[in-house]
Length: 398
Image (cartoon, rainbow, N blue to C red; front, side, top):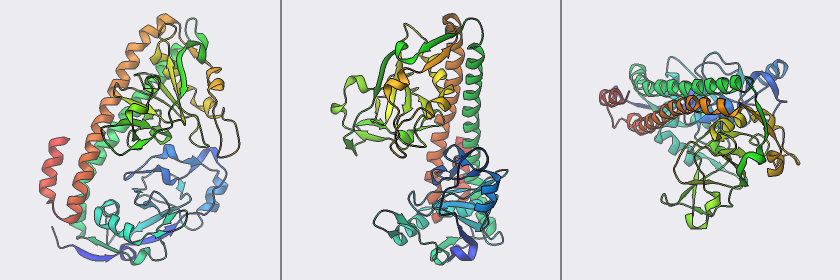
């Protein structure tokens, strides 16, 4: 690999920031990105919202994100970044900045990897301004910050290695999304055939309860406790989970396979639904409602899919002032859902289980590949690992 040189952020990229306010959200239209959509080098649009074309024109007067731009958070979630993909019309959200690579100096994806690498993350930690309520990256001085990189050919070699892992992760995520959509379509079709059932959630549930007020622990031996950030895209993401003292958790608050989790507080998170597909010990905090369907009355997998389909309706059920919105258990319990008749539920269960298992395998493989990528990235970015050696490691895992 060619010699690495130390230069500055401003020498390899232009720096822009986003608006300092939030426009009105719409049901469709261009994306208004959120810093929550920056997820370990990837852009998760499920965490963003839509705005009107008129507001898009207003909010992009300074800069319109384009393919290859590196998006980053300059307040809270410091250190998070992602590359802007192609085919997306979007504007920067609040507290979000953008690095526009100078293509004769740096490969866009390499700039992302350099940003996420340990050396630049240390620079962020050292140069962050710590305020009374929020920490932030000073955008005025960011162009002068040091950054190291090799020649373009070697940058592209590193991108090819790490990009192979990212590509496989993307394929697995598409598999998971496609299988879930197929499952929802199968369930939806079955629910309009024959003699569908209209049931009240509380009447067919054996448990309808909020989670615990956790006493957090740093020990990996203690019980996993899920929070609202864990409920995303209809699935449970374990990365934001924490640990709590096991002996303080009642048995009734432990999760069972096929439980349904419903976020129950806060604008933007309230109403999100996910199915718990694991037998691993876990619980949830008090911002999440656990719904456990009674198998004597309904198939819990089919009922879980009914709640997934009902998420838009559940999101509108919150009560209270802005920022303090709550979804009461009684209101959720009184909600009616539509299910296929019992015979169709039994037949559908096998198909839904098979689809969910396929998605879970794909997502588990992605987690392994993500761990590998995050292990290789700092070694490649520091020059401790040769590209050829990394290529062999990646080849063995893909």
